[in-house]
Length: 319
Image 1 (cartoon, helix red, strand yellow):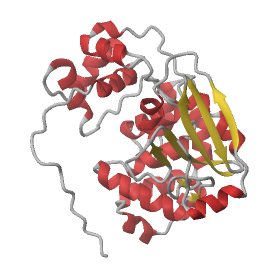
Image 2: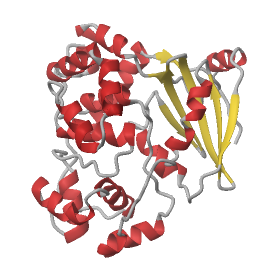
Image 3: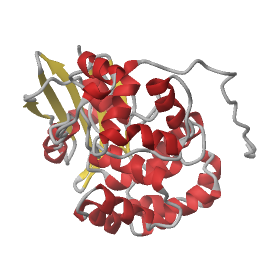
Image 4: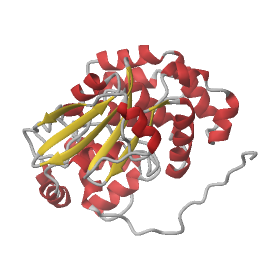
């Protein structure tokens, strides 16, 4: 596939030489299922899936950078543009699940999980190492529909993030730095549709942004990382789990408190809904690998029949 660009991005790309690398995974890899789960809606400004190519815009210590990934003959061909190209290319193996350890995971405990694991051997748990970006995204997604959260993320990132370099299929942006999140004015949060509790939580977290990221990375394991994250005002177990899933590829993180997850897990494993306690009981045989089970259940395609019309959230903002 030819990598095309809008004129503005193409002009930027000509001033930024591309760097390339090839990652040869020692395991089967489904690139789209592994990395594609990071996309926050179809108009995510930080990530575009364009045919066989996955584009990611990221913030690095050296500046905004874009990386494009594609599978060719079992290899991941990666191209990066921008001052942080070396950093982006170094992260490619982790993005593709190189640090994902299935350990003694036993899919045979349930026929649906066994079948999903057989059908999707290339499903790996991705890791971005972008702790604060994942935390910011999860905070915005608290207690709202996906449509509302994805819209707010898009609105804020395109206005306060950094334009990504390279021949991107459409204009892309790296997420704001903690300092930039901290400086977003109150009117902008309102305009984006982010409620005051979530904006206050994100601003408070941004005040400690780099320290939070370091503390989470230095923590000994999932439980310690959870304690670090939930020590922040306004950050509970759901937000912590969502952050660890995206940033650290935590194989055991479970998003307790999610509006849909317990119902989906219960229906897939037993044919009927359950609550959070019931979900944790069902997942207990796979302790240590519960996120892997959740991902395999999602990949199985088994879904509870819809019971009513999709929620249409009200919007009380002044236009």
